Length: 207
Image (tube, rainbow, N blue to C red):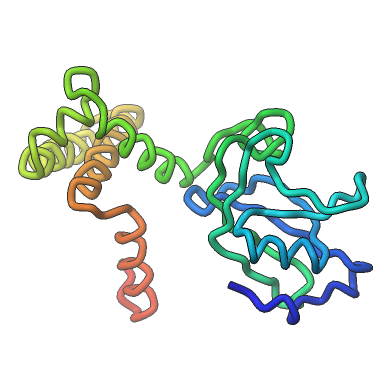
């Protein structure tokens, strides 16, 4: 994941700042610090462990609250004196019982896509009589694909003749149904982003 011997702890008197980021939504959850031992413990346990400057020692997130930060990736900055932890959070990252220490918004911006994907996974397992997502999944891929087509037409029509609010609403319906279709095919939106990234690298990006 990362070689701890490459991290410059000396510059910060034994500590490095750590930005903790939700791996799915990319939302910044908190800022903490690590010493070498905390980094070693994090690598060994795959759970975020920090050095508390106020407590004067190491602590693993969730020891008292039960909220956990499961680490899926660690990246150092260009000077190797700061880290970004990509995590799958269970519970809240903030001690004030918020998703993030930086405001109370949940998955702002494009992070809403990842949060919607998580909701679709949960709803897909529900009773079809109680969930539109579950009902769609029960009807199969062809019906879901048909809905994507219908929503695409409605979005196009709103783009030609509708007010901005209608276009935004129809586009939201289109995105939702597209994500359901991807889920039905055992795919995620990241698969789409990967294609866009590969096209950009090859100089094939739109425009």
